[in-house]
Image 1 (cartoon, rainbow, N blue to C red):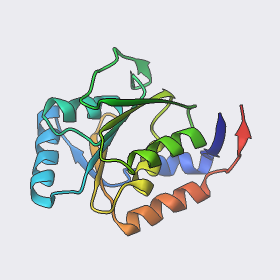
Image 2 (image 1 turned 135 degrees about the vertical axis):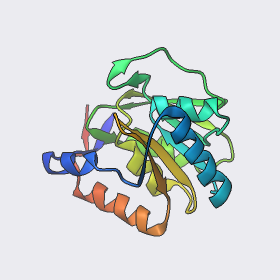
Image 3 (image 1 turned 90 degrees about the vertical axis):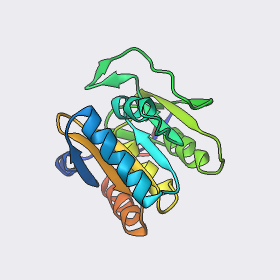
Length: 177
């Protein structure tokens, strides 16, 4: 496993702020809001990052093209969830890092029309940046904002540039473990 990026202490605070539109509320309120956004904006595709949000979207039949999960909620192990994706990929991505393996898996998903689930051994949070970077423009990336709701990131060229800026600001360590 080669670690491509490591979050710096300075960036940890920036990552606590939503990277897109924060939608607060209960399960039914947040899922209804995503449903409305999907109906109104008709995004090219839907991507989810995080176990709870991926599960919630699937339960309301808003099936993501890509779900990135780590079988944890709030850093505690949970029962693995079966999603609609027929193709499952396992990657290693330790907390606070982004591995080359995870980047390659995410980017490869967007070269096919199949639905995928990426199961991360480690932590999936920072992979939101990679999903935004590689997702087609006019897609939605949805992730959970702990104790607040969900965040909807509309993929635009500006958002892609912002994701790239975050990655450039991360410590590029390129070390093998």
